[in-house]
Every structure is written in structure tokens, then in C-alpha cells.
Length: 186
Image (tube, rainbow, N blue to C red; front, side, top):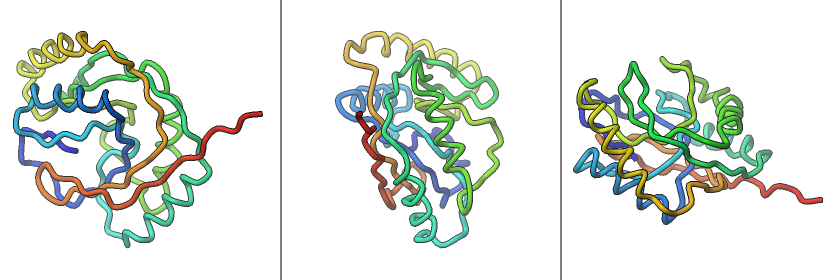
């Protein structure tokens, strides 16, 4: 899941993500590799950013499963390449679905997994990080050129959430997955 240039990341962090389906996932993984060669990408939408957790994993899984069971799938449409100004993270913004992701984050960022992040939550798909400001601007332009070549759909459904743990530099393991309910039709 991670594509960090630097090695200053804390291990044993936990996050909640929704993996992006194919063929969009492969395109985004290839894009990440062009920006950060040698990384181990797994295209995903972040719901709960990485956070420390010292509790019992099974308890967190139980709570996430309980919360997820009441949620419905929703659609997301990816927007344009942007850069977070302070952290120099290159990311894809959301053209549609951002309010649902914010609501999902607000509901899941509670109980055992509640965490106050250093930055306000902003729904996104990370593409590259851990670069200085000059390098980031060059890489963002490269990312924009590559993203403009994508002719497939920029839309996907958030149907499954995955609870993941950072177990080594650049390596995240899936601990549990939670299916969201299909919307009710009347």
C-alpha cells in the first residue's frame, strides 16, 4: 500500500482503506511506480489515515465490522491531480463521493480507532509523498500528464473496506475486510 521515499515512517500503524478495482487500480499502480520507482503500490482510497493503535486487533475488527454492517455502498469519481501544500503529498482528489467518504471517516474515526491526525481529513488517493517542494512540483506535472492519458472510467463503487497494518517499510498487511450493504431499491 505504501510508496514512501523516506524511511521516517512509523511501523505498526493501522489504517482503513477501500481498494480501487481493476482496471483503474493497475493504471494507478503503474502511475505510482513511475513517480516512485521501487515502491509497492496497491491503489486505494483512504478512509482512516494511518494511526497508532495499542489495543486488541480483534476488538477493533469487531467494532469496524459492526459499524460497516449499517453502511451502504456508494460511488466515487476521481478528479484531478493535486498536492497537499504542507506535506507535499501528490494525490488524486475526488470529483464525486467526497461527502460520503468524509461521513464514513467521521463514523469510523471513533472508539478504539479514534485518532486526531495532524491534518484535517481530506478524501483522496495518494500517488507519491516524501519529496521536497521542488521535486513534488515536477512529479505532480508528470502525474497530470500520465493521468490525462487514462481513457477508462474514473468512477468506482466503494463496496469493501479493508483494515490494514503497516508491518514493514512499504508493506501493509490486510487484517480484515468488511462488505458494505447494497443500497435498497424501492
